[in-house]
Image 1 (cartoon, rainbow over the protein chains, first blue to last red):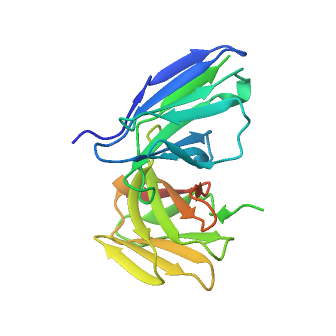
Image 2 (image 1 turned 180 degrees about the vertical axis):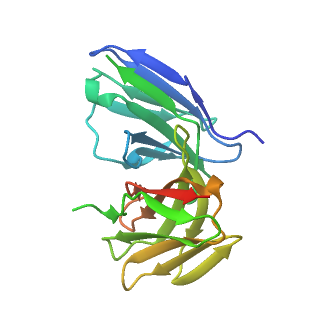
Length: 111
Length: 111
C-alpha cells in the first residue's frame, strides 16, 4: 500500500508570494494533519481535518489556510510568504486522528 | 512554558546498551502519547504509542507512562548504530485534537 504522498518535494518562493502544498493520505485514512518543522525543533501543529471538516487549528496566522477534499486529499495554502515561513511542511494521515503517519514533507525555502 | 519537554541531547550510548529517553508534559488531562523517530533529512516515523499507565513493549522498544508524574519514557534495548536519530515525544491533549511535539532528543549509538 502506498504511504502518505506530498507534492512538491522542494519549493523555492520569494517573499510576498503564495504557495499551495498538496497531500494524499494513506488509503482508508480520513484525517489529515499539517505540521511545520523548522531545523532543530519538533513539528508544530497547523491544522487537522477529518471528514472534510476542520477539527483543530494551531497558533498560526490567517495567512495559513487548508482544506480537505471528498477523496480525503488536502491542500495547505500560505499567502504573503515571509522569510520565517521557510521550513519542512509535513502532512500526516490517520484513520481517526490518533496514530498519525507522516509523508516525506515539502521543503519550502522563501528568499 | 513548553507543553512537552525533552532533553535535546545528544545522548551517547554504546552499542548493545539500553538507551533511555525521557519526556514530560504539562497537561494532566493528556490522553495519548507517541514516540517518533526522525533520521536527519527525513520525516518522523511512528515507533510506539501508549494510552494507559505502565509499560508497553514492542520488540526492542518499551514505552513507559506515569500519568501521576506526567512523564513518559522510551527504552531501547540492545541499541544499534541504526538507532542513531532524533526521537520525538508527542502528546495529544484532551481539550483539542491537536498533537503537540517536543523538540526531540538526539541519540547517538557509538560502536
